[in-house]
Image 1 (cartoon, rainbow, N blue to C red):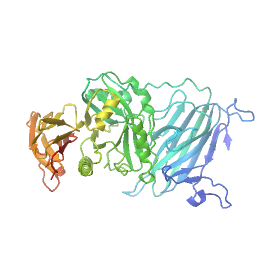
Image 2 (image 1 turned 90 degrees about the horizontal axis):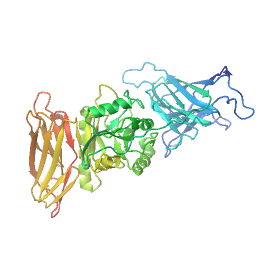
Image 3 (image 1 turned 180 degrees about the vertical axis):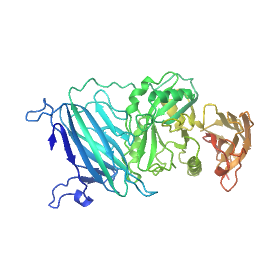
Image 4 (image 1 turned 30 degrees about the vertical axis):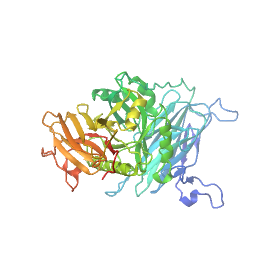
Length: 545
């Protein structure tokens, strides 16, 4: 029933059997779509219809006012589909669509997930996996949003509100044992569309220093997803942290790409990207062409991750699993590493899950050496969302040919980088032998038994402990003094080490430097201050032991 521009539309729950159709074989009131190769399981509800504008086709009705609202209520049971689609039939003459939603949060026993539900929208171009219809996503960070030709709520894409079937999408990623009652309100505003929105994408090059080491945080959030910082505040924080570049990685949306041009500059390269938030882990799509969107609506069982990894690489970008051991729901990484270009092993302030990630990465280095497969560089990023999270804690120091998007991506891809907790930490890591020298991410080819000197110069870590780690484990440990600066040298051969990497650790809580043994090195050292990618040693005249 529609009265004075306000429509009530109630959608009632059905069992999966009822969803397939009515007993007489007719269509059911909703359809259940199983993913397979197409993406995660989805549920499509009854469509919501609105009156046409006054200048619509002959025979259509005039809305009672410039705004028409419909309210949709429903219930979702535990075990519902990953995504629930609410079709909205948008008539001609609409200049703005506004959506708000709410859901109940009944008390649950300790240890039992309560209700949590995300929201987003697709336009008349459809909801196909990786398709063109995406118009925005705010996860659970907002309870309402608006889209018009001229403007949109952060996280959503401005543009025409064209006639056709749009889809509000709910993402109930946690449903309480009691189920979830939800309420969605859709308001259409009729009128002229207004001027088109103009994006200001950031330039792909800043004023660099030629081939040099550049510092950058590649995992940052703004108000365009679940961050509380404006893009201006993120840019200011990056400059204050002494960074040369940042990557914008809002969850599941490229909406912030079009504003970064105002805040980039000769001193700060802003690279566009996305944090792709699936139900089986999060990954960073770094270096996306401005405005490009990467879909997240699949699980590891759907065999879709590789498709979107290829999409990112076609645009010159990188695929990087993020915080692989994060304890939050849906954060732990389940897709494997075959389609990854690098791996985030340190996220924000150093914690035990970072220790675990570094250990996993180190095991993967040994596997790459053993099998001859491509190795994956380590990255560290802040994942900063809001105060007091620190932008640039940690960040990547990348050797690149220029302060430009392509050059930075090339440097990260090649592993010519190390991770530092702040701009006050500086490293120089080389391996020298037989008249040759190799740096981070490079390979030194020498006779198997020729002596090679591994050298680390460090600044900015008072009383820091330097660790040299090979495929055999920690092989050398030495501390620097209170100045935080020093040089540590250790000798080995290619017959004894397939690779060497360096860590610099802070003292233990009791002030001791820590020590390694077979009981588990990581538990006996203080927090990480810096971590390098490896230098590989290749024996040229004999098999390694």
